Length: 274
Image 1: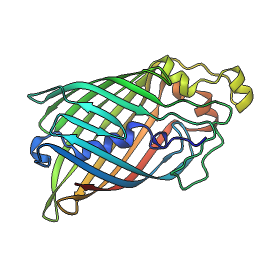
Image 2 (image 1 turned 90 degrees about the vertical axis):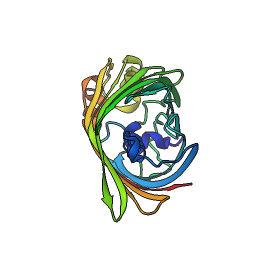
Image 3 (image 1 turned 180 degrees about the horizontal axis):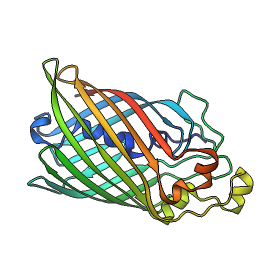
């Protein structure tokens, strides 16, 4: 089997950067269209082949974002609903899609040779994660936290929290935007074990030392993105970030013996808004 491409996109990292850049929290910075809006994107990403790897690969990827007013946003990342939206505070349900990981390390959208690091560790199945989020914005700053439970696949509890500074700038007579800030991720034992445990049988099959991961903060880092409009409907988004793996997943034999605690990423995408 081939490794699903969402995992190649470093999970939510890239999507958080690009989605935030296309949907600033300040109402005056958003495209003032009511009703349904659809954006189609294509881009390239340079990042680790799997979370915790020290080898990098260029991947190409598509994305489709569908919005309804300031109520609903849906993309290949998942679905988010602003059930509460008042005085800078937003909250509501979310559904995220974690496309898992295949042990052969193949990447159908990658331009490299993939990796053999995961052979013997087994597959992590596609997971639907259901949960909720809360976000508060004041001025140019926005703080957001999200918590989700896997209903299948890894069946673990996972979440993230971020602080963003976002603003606009003049881009050749049009309004561009940028955002940047720190971000942390965390997971419970079930989630971390699905991706970073190495049991006795897996140790024999993979050559890695046995390891049993617990729960805790999984990473901390800093991400930024910038959106430059080319026309009323076309924009270019650039994004980059760095994360340092921490806690039990950083101590996993997969990371210590074959990967790295330092995880970087950078990419660019072209978007068309219908």
